Length: 195
Image 1 (cartoon, helix red, strand yellow):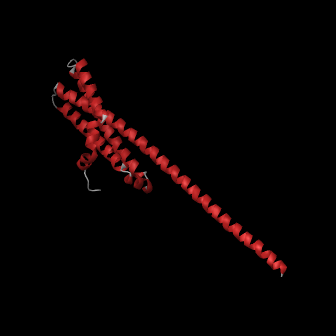
Image 2: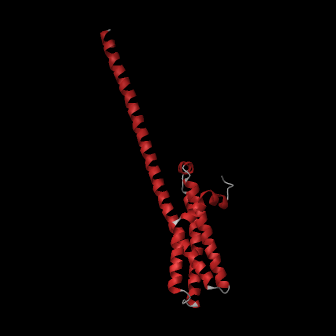
């Protein structure tokens, strides 16, 4: 439905994916490992540089994701969209795009806030976790796009084969009609000769 919002889609299936996805747990594990090995020994200067670069990258990813969504939707033919909607793949793909975009915007805003105010190490590690999680979410999105492309290629191949089959069937039908007409003409020739 066009009037369904992000939270509706998240409630209908996205929450399960978010909570059970490997990317959440790997991001959490990497953040805990980073905290346990580095702790508070990172200088504020290095944290500032990391936050600034991660915020810039998050903003860039937002633009790339939105552009990718627009390209994907505009280049997809209507027959393929119908197939994807029927199989509930389209909604899943668009939800992933939307979730990743919102996550990217969140990380960008979080980074901007950290740059504007003094921050604690807990806030920094929460930002690091969010950024790592964003990177995994983008990699998951790329995997879905590749899968989408493979499905589109399969459908295009099936359509091409179907058209070729229809042409061959039409050609066979036309040949049968021609043979039938030739046979009728041959049968009528001896009758004409005997008279």
